[in-house]
Image (cartoon, rainbow, N blue to C red; front, top):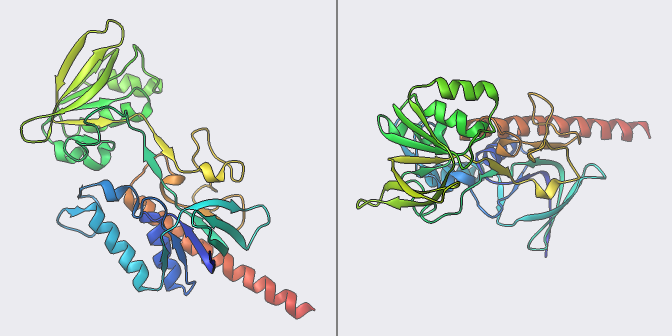
Length: 323
């Protein structure tokens, strides 16, 4: 067991965490990134990335995250493969955190970039066909299904928004919902029902995602939740849109969250209610959930963290001078 001391501790290592680390290291803050269970975040399980600025050609998600990590290390970030299991935020800075390894981390400021994970159905073929026709992000992957047949699974705001978005690329979008009415806001439902490119399948549950001879998604196996009747739906792409779960269990009772568990920050900033504690990326963003927005928020958190530390140091110097 060891004790690690740093000016800035960054919990999480997706685009937000790595970007925060790059900016913090360049500010000579010698940040530590505790990478967590999935170093690199959700992009490490994404194949083609076509919408991250700066790359004319398609890049691979794992490669992009390796490059971000290498850049952060190159400018002075220390990466530690550990998972934070407890944090003490009650007493203000310096903040203390304990890793699964038993190591202790002491930091003058804290940046939370623990991210969020898409909720999945947990049925056969879902994970095996990830990136091969099955996705949880239409904004990320819809472009690859131009002119093809696609389905969206879910009944809330996210599902309806994804279905509407996909009509920009496809003339044949099917929304599959296991009930006979949607939970989405009424104005979104009105747009959905008014769109001639969208068909709704009511009372249908997806039992499995089935591959074709080419190894790509070919059809969905469905069951009618009212009658039990089995059916299939041939599609080129299927988007699971049943929500996301932010990784905020560690901060329950310690930081304010919304009803879905996302960390609340001061509007337009990464600042939480505790001075010196910042949140960036998908852990606080249930609207955009893009790598580029997460990276931008990570930058903001590092810059605000630098300002917090400078102000804190100035206060300490004033107190010493007054003695």
